Length: 88
Image 1 (cartoon, helix red, strand yellow):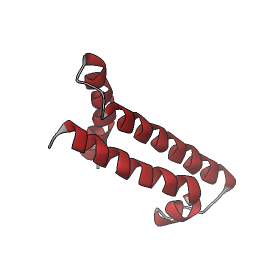
Image 2 (spheres, helix red, strand yellow; image 1 turned 60 degrees about the vertical axis):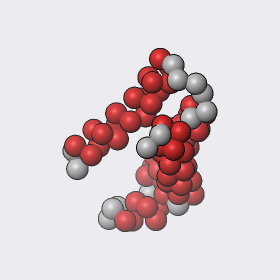
Image 3 (tube, helix red, strand yellow; image 1 turned 120 degrees about the horizontal axis):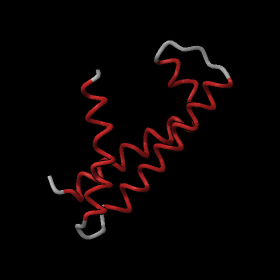
Image 4 (spheres, helix red, strand yellow; image 1 turned 135 degrees about the vertical axis):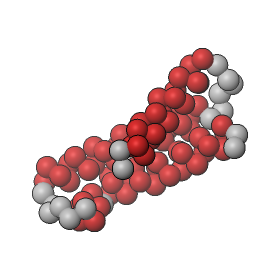
C-alpha cells in the first residue's frame, strides 16, 4: 500500500470517529457501559476534536514530498496505534 493511500484511509477513518465523538459522546460512552455526565461528555468532545486535528495532519501530510519531517509525522501517527493494538 502506498503511503498516500494509507494516509487517506487514516484521515477518513479518524475524521469519522472524531465527528462521532464530537457530536454523540453520550451514545459512544453508553457502548462502554458508562453513564453520561457533563464531565464525560466534555472529555468525549475534546477527544473528538483531537481526532479531527490528527485527521487534518494526516490529510495535509499525504500530498507532501518525502522528507524527514514527513517520516517523523507518519511515525507519530502510527506509533500510538501500534501500542493500542499491543495492549488490547
